[in-house]
Length: 166
Image 1 (cartoon, rainbow, N blue to C red):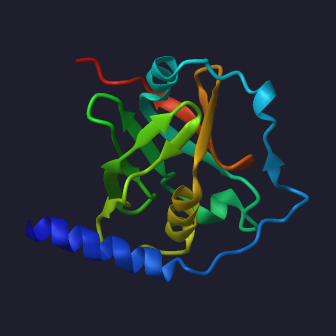
Image 2 (cartoon, rainbow, N blue to C red; image 1 turned 30 degrees about the vertical axis):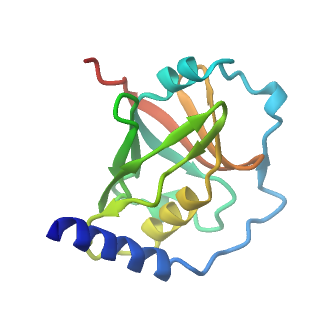
């Protein structure tokens, strides 16, 4: 119970400290034409494709260079379909939470439980801010995951590990 309170408090503090946002440059924003995105048509196949661990390869439209945000460790996100759990690293701290899918729509429950190590730079805050805004996703060729806010891509991941087998 103490851990849950500590994680919830840490998460609330991080979200509160991430309240400042930079508006993305319209010249580099990636709008996604959903009709051209090769996503499987039913939820179970989409969820099957989503399962596994993904490593961040791009923070789209972020003015700070990716290599400066994450000089040594890149953030990850792992989806476990059976318990509808998501977990990963922010490049510094680890997080866990729940998710739900409805077609191409994704939501991440009521936030994440997050460890509370002090992190250099602002890579973690960029990652957390972007994840909070995500409401759609698509998967291309089962190897590239794009997380979007409406039709604007925010985060791009590459699959590094397949789903758990039960």
